[in-house]
Amino acid sequence: MRNKFLLAVIASVLISACAYAQEATGIQVTSVSVTGNEKVVSPSILRVVTTKPGTTLDRETIQNDIDAIYAQGFFSFVDVSMTREGGGMAVTFSVRENPVIESVNFEGNTIFSEEQLMHEVFSRPGSVFNREFFRHDLDRIQELYHNAGYVMVRVSDVQIQGGNIYVTILEPKVGYVIVQGNTKTKGYVIRRQLKLQSGDIFNVGHFRHDLSTLNGLGYFEDVNVGFDVEDESGEVVDLIVTVKEKRTASIGLNLAYGTESGVSGGLTYSDTNIFGRGMNFEVGFNEGDEASYWTTFSSPYMDSKTFAWRVGARYYTYDDRYYYRQGRKQFEFDEERITFFAGVGKKFSNEEWSWFLTLRHEDAKYDDINYAIPGYIDDLTPWDGVNQTVELTLTWDKRDEYAPYPTGFVWDTNFEEAVKVLGGEYDYLKYWTQARIYIALNTALDGLVDSDFPWTASNPLLLATRLRIGSATQDQLPAFARYSLGGMNTLRGYNTRSFEGSNYYLGNVELRVPVLSMLTLVGFYDVGNANDEMDWDNYHDDYGVGVRVKTPFGSVRVDYAKGEEENRTYFGFGEMF
Picture: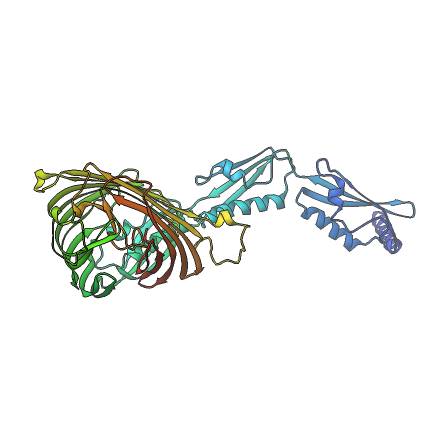
């Protein structure tokens, strides 16, 4: 009897279902509503629903509506119920809201504070937790890290406990730094260029800068890097730096032409990695009306633990050189100078600051005056002789070392004391200070100029300025110790050493405009003066345009300047400052 009863019930259900299916065909929806929602308003939920009053009831459409409501992200459960209403069917979607956010908590973050991370989060306490919104929040947090160079950082876990959200951030750290491939260069010479050390959080921008600096030493044909993750957690990554060394000794042929000095040429022998210890040695000569012979030996690298040093000597002669006094040519003369120097320097514990101390012996001679103008003034030749100086330079460098272009500022202060007790013939104190400031203008001009201009975040429109002022304790300094202005590195519209004295000031402004990745146009203005009195009203200035071309041998520089009386063109390498 029980089996017959069950069969009867099943048959009755099947007959009813078939009847309902047939009856549902062509049934219209009379109303659509939502139940179970408290914080999320019904119109906001129903805007994604395609089942509307007056439409024909369709089960596939109903299922798509359920999926669309769930995809809004506010709900942990979505269902539907249908009841007869008049001549049609009332559709009610039942939802269960996610909990209201009480707090968002971060664990494992050290680079950015919780406040900085919350700035990227749109999911705020008091609002209903939304899965989709929070996924985008996590994407923005990861983008924040990646834009700062921390490309290996990721969100490793998210826990939701009631209304409290716990986000765990994994910031992978550097494990071992392995250097291989070097046979001549000492390991410490390579490692000291890699600022990223064991225990540091890996930053691809900083590491690329380290590799660029390593390449820039000129010791290697190639520098490659590999990564090895120590375990599945990805918390520690080993860096494997592989170098391929090249010859660092070279012989160079020099050939030059100067407007005043004529044709000159010579040879240079140099090695930038003596004994594989990063020390430089150079010996060379130039012959011509302006001739010189020199040798230097130095170790240029410095940090808070490592001293930089240099020693050298130079013999210099210049036949038939022009002498100017306040921009006016007075006569021609011959100059002979012998210089010996030795210096040492180091960075302070705050490595933005550094010092360098130099001892210098100089013996200068000026004679053979010829082609003097009528009524010429000779305040040059009485001042030759031996000069013994101690020079101290302090530098505060606030440039961003990881930026691909100069940005920030550098402040230098210099004291030069000449003392007779060390064997010299003069006593005086010279002192000058200088600030170089570099400002990228891209952000300031964003939205004001066409975005199709060629400057980019890594090659920006740049404003560069240099301000320098100097004085001395003597009203008149020896000729070889005077401040001088004029030439391609100071006042570009005037001859070299056109203005000299025991006091001076100088200002240079350049607007560097990228045109192509390898080509930059420069507009500039120079102003300043040098004399025995600080005469601010009597200044000299020039303006002009220039071109910078990046080549495998460095940046080639061409400047055309218009001075007070003549125009001058200069060719050289690198920026003026």
